[in-house]
Image (cartoon, rainbow, N blue to C red; front, side):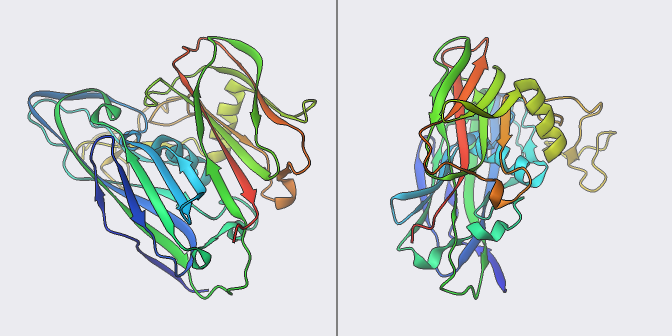
Length: 351
């Protein structure tokens, strides 16, 4: 089959706490949509940027949604969660920026990208969830911007310039009679109800097929990572424990399975021992740390794989189920900390 890569719509610029929308073409079948961010910070006299958040600058995006026909949500999460999903899909944390600068400074023009996959990366037949946009009356990409404070712990006398441009990878010449499932990923977010808990259950929707479930935990502003989980269990019909994970073990397992490498862009192209051999501006921290932006396992992030062998026969089909629940133990949480759950499910084509 022939394919095409192209820009899908014009860039939309950053305005704090404001939504923007892109009207995407509907003449082909989508494999993926790439979000291209241009980003710059300038500090004035007396200004400073210190301690950027782990996913920065993607923490600047509070919600990204892909909506068909004005009502059917295919994807919905924040920038940090899409950053997490890209790690599990592609085995590397896409570059983030060390934005720490002092007064009267300029980070220069930085470029970042994330991939919103319509196909199911890692499955035996990933193309079974391509999105046939030819059957839709509209396809809208919605972005809700956050604020400057979402970039780093300290943002003093700063000016942010940012924009998002959507690019696409589309498949041509697909038989119009082809049928595709939908790879739906919708994040729900809520505060920890108590400081600690044992076997606290949270019900999930039933009637579709689950591929995996991502849990990540953040502070009250959904910026900084917090690490509160102790045990994670997936329970079918109230009695059968399909998955039982120690929270520390699942973080290590995810790092081993999906690749432990994380990289960040330096503010300038340094020449030192940490210099990446192919891209001098990419730094890899010495000593291979066990967590954080530079590599190792990811704190506060827990991916529960279900179809681990990539077979659609291994999906958790919940048609006919009375209940599907996550059963969680945690300790040391603030009741303002946030728990975010993003299932990846296959649903029949809605067109």
